[in-house]
Image 1 (cartoon, helix red, strand yellow):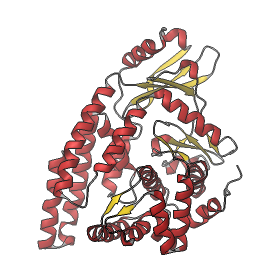
Image 2 (cartoon, helix red, strand yellow):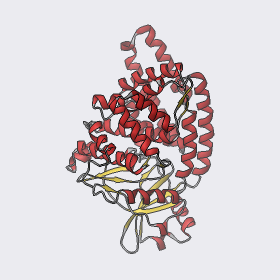
Image 3 (cartoon, one colour):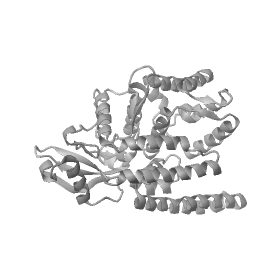
Image 4 (cartoon, one colour):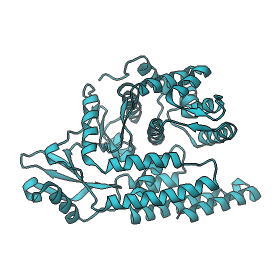
Length: 418
C-alpha cells in the first residue's frame, strides 16, 4: 500500500514538471481517490493502528484533498464490526458473570466500532441505559505487530524524505497506544475530565460505572447527540454550527490552558452535540496530563506568538525544552508561525492547504539551516489536538476568531457561561 501510494505521487510530481499542473490535476484527483480507498481497504482488513492512523487522516479536511476525508472519515465510528457473540465472550470473561445477569437488555448491533474496540447499547436491571465498550480480544498482539511495521516504514521514510522524520512521533504513539488498551486508565481519565468540566453547563462527560468496568470492558451511562461534523443533523436539531465551532474551541482551550489535562483524541467519532449547544465528550483512552508548570509555559508561548514578541517566543520555546543545533532562535520563530501565529493574525480558525504548504516549505528550509535537536514530547499531543480541531473547524466552515477565544484564557478566564 505504501509503495503504490508513494510511487504514484512521485510519478505524478515528475509528470507535473513536464506537462504542468493543469494537465495532471484530474490524474491527481483520481490518485487521491484510489489511494484513500486502498488505505481504507487495507485498514479494515488489518485493523489495529492502521485504522487509528486513517481516522486521523480522515479528520484533516483542512489540509488533505476531499477524496481522503470522504473515504477515511467512515472509519471514525463505522469500522466493520465483530460478531456480538465474540464481544459477549469478552464481557463474561472479564466480569465473571453471564451477560443476562449483568444486563436486562443487550443490543447485539454495535452503536459504533473503531480501531481498538466497539460499543454496544445495553440496559441495566435498574432501568438505566448504558454504553458498553468492549476491547477486541486479539488487539494487543495486533498493536505490537503494527508498531513494528510502522517503525520499519518510518525509518525508511526518514532516509528517503529528510523533511519527514516521524520517529519522534512514533515513539509517542508507542507510549500512548498501550495506555489506550487499559480501560481502567481510560475510566480515570474520564472521571478527571468530568470533574474538571463539572462547573460547565455546556459540556457533558458520561459517568463511568466502575463496578462494571475492567481493563477490557468499560461501561458508562448512555448519552445521545448529533455527530459534531454532521452539519445536516445539527441544522435539523436547530443547532448553529458556528456556536458549535466556538464552543469546541473554548472547551479545548479550557482543558489545555487552564486544566493542563485534556482529551487528546477529539476526532468526530468522539464528540457529539446536544441542543444548547452542549458538547458530549466520549472515549478518553488518549488524554494528556502536563508536567508541573507546562500549561503555564504553553500559555506564555501562545501569548508571545499573539503579541509577535520574537524574544518572548524564543524564551518560551526554550522554557518548554526546545533546543536548536546552533542555539539561535530562527527555526523556533518559524515554528511559532506554523503553530499559531499566521492563523491568529488572519483570524483563521483552521489551517488550509495553501497555508500549510507555505509553512512546510519555510519550516523545512529553517530546519535545514538550524535543526531543532530537542523538543518536548508533551507538546506533540497539543499539536495533534490542534490538527484534529482544525479539520473539524473546516467541516463546520468555522468563522471563529482564534484570538477572541484564546485571550480570555490567557487572562485567566473563560468565554463560556459555565
